[in-house]
Length: 422
Image 1 (cartoon, rainbow, N blue to C red):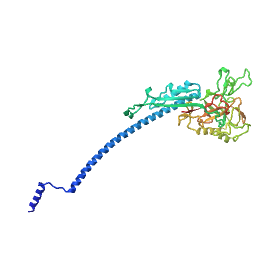
Image 2 (cartoon, rainbow, N blue to C red):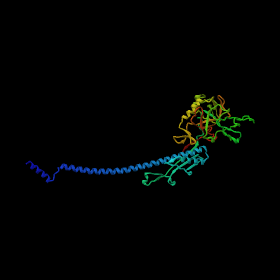
Image 3 (cartoon, rainbow, N blue to C red):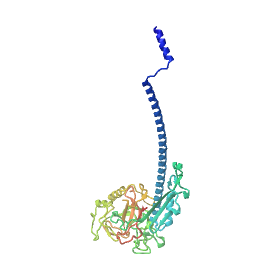
Image 4 (cartoon, rainbow, N blue to C red):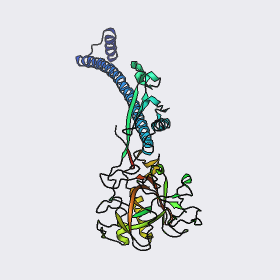
């Protein structure tokens, strides 16, 4: 009986459709709706991501091209700046040589690149103004010359190349008429003279020559070089002292003494300031005050014709320390490109603390041993080089200074301050 009932139940289930409860049917509908919704949102997200990627790639592409063009413009400006400075550097030495200044600017540009290509500056791209002592340089990467800067991703938008132009103007101007003659080195050098046997054979002294003038001419008299020496001070038509022709020359500086008599052109002589009444000022003599003056300025300026008091001896110790202090005050500076060069700015810098003025004196007025009042004939400016081993020093001659009087003019021109003005 029980078997028959179970068989009947099975037959009933098999023979008729099964009725699913209402709650189960609702759950199934919800699941289907959820699946449809999720499928729809995933599709929208994919589309959104795709659109975002297009925008992102476009932005990155634009950033790459803009960055590349900014870099190219910066490189072109750097070349223009340095080329203009190089051309102005020639005017500092040869203020009337327009062709040399133009050639120097062009050649300097060829040493540099813009986006990996040699920077080409044509003669028409360089303007030289001899009146203002300026050099203007254009660096051009343009379509008209077949040298535009190519793009990368901007080509998609039809922008295949971009023109780049940079302009710079540099000037070689006097450092100033006052010229800092209140900040003189506390040493003085004899002015140059001519060692010669005749006016047609003038030559300037070497570092081992001595000044031997013919004070009482006699036919049988000769100095150690076989001819008598002559000195003509600044202002004389036959001037034999330092002039513009010597700019860029290394000047040797040694302690006085030794040699074949007379006075050596490289001997330095320490000095102490005197006022207008020839009275000691600025602390007076002594090694400590002497050393202090290497890196400080005096109480007043000096002019040609003023007197100073020589110190006895060479003050070797204080002089060594003084030159060390000058060098260490601006150790970065080097002599490069015919000027005091600052690598960090890639430019000449005549305002460096290693550019120092120094008084010169008539070599016929050789200082005696001990203290002696000696007259200043002119002022020279030197770029102090790194001190050498021992008691020897050197500097690069930068030119004569004005006398310190605002109404006076320099004998052969001031040291030039080379810098960008545009």
